[in-house]
Picture 1 (cartoon, rainbow, N blue to C red):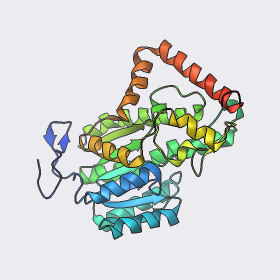
Picture 2: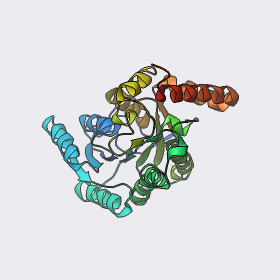
Picture 3: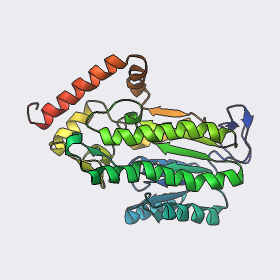
Length: 302
């Protein structure tokens, strides 16, 4: 179906009945939290390149404004808004701003996230509060703000960014994995509810993507692993991190096709399948990987 200048991707309800109101992506509007860098920035740039009006919502307002300006200079339509996703009123304000500007909200990408890595024995309760506030409460706030709007307008798509750590065990990132498992569970359950109200929910589960979060947890994250930046880079290079641009292209294709759980790069599904069908094997692999990580952080592995 290709009407009203929309892309050739067919927009469907429950993969059967067309929903004419959801636009993919020309003429649509989208909010991307964590839109100043990494995956969020790439999603915003690719959405805009396909004719979508984009709001890049981020704590780093200066950087977000620079990205939005670059998008506009390339002929796209983007704005930037400063937001702390752990503050519901702030997230709701961004949603209402988008409605006042475009009179619709097609896509809500709840993408902002941080990582706090290293052995859990070194974490403080403040670390727990920090990561839950951003990674889980931030998604909840985005869902709550967008959900009511989409119910009223009768269409929309909420996309929550989780992680492969939300589909399998992740020793050395236990707090991070806890929040990402919660995001996966939220998304799977809400998708069923939302399908009865004619809108959609998907969850992104990236493998290793070459973003700042791979080194020290990103600007607002933290790492208790006793590793140098060079050691961290070499560790992640072993699993071939994907570029954010390549990830965004693949992710938006899957979102347009209304995929429920989106694992990119696709070969990372092997870890997911192992965890589901061969849990003992998956546990053994994770234990060995964590042991190697501990040795590396202690300087025993060069």
